Image (cartoon, rainbow, N blue to C red; front, side):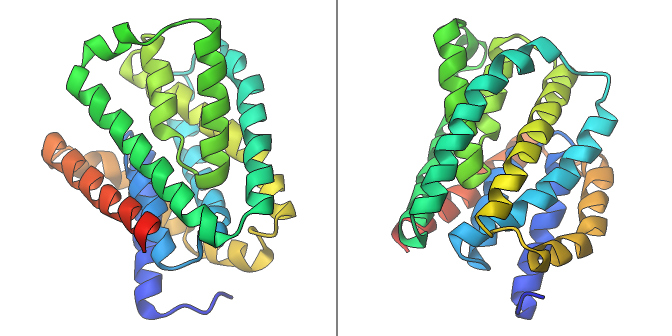
Length: 248
């Protein structure tokens, strides 16, 4: 069992709850989770620790949105995602926390910037982006790399699916199947890197009820919170977390 203080457990519990919320259709929360967990664990270990929790949330999401998936968009992306995952694997294998922590911080800030640009431009954002083979390759490799190195490819996948013009439910459902597939692929790599162990898995299993509570209640609770205010709060906190990873 990991040796954790009370505050560490509270942060981990909050991360589990936010992961559940994120699978209710609020993927921006994962950016905050990525930064929060590093207040408890070193960067490298935190990446592995989060993955089983994300998988639990993914299973809920694909069950809930099982009829809302457009497979052709996933199939065309997966080969390029695999290249990104393998690239990320070699990075994780060869760099330490001193480099990984600021790298994840930069990834977090880039994801936040993409979210802000997308929100600012609205429909124009989709029109600006290309819809070509090279765009699919770029998104796939970048998404695979960022999810492997930092579990932080949500914004990239959202952009890809928005360009495809998917309605909200299909966007969430297709994204859910994407992350379930990709996270399952990542799992043996993380085990090989020893950032997922029986020790960390035992803690992950304890957090399943909290993740499920977040998943089941997230959509109901969050609809009473002004969406704009909530999104801004999440992005501000994630930005502070990303800056902390880079400069602290």
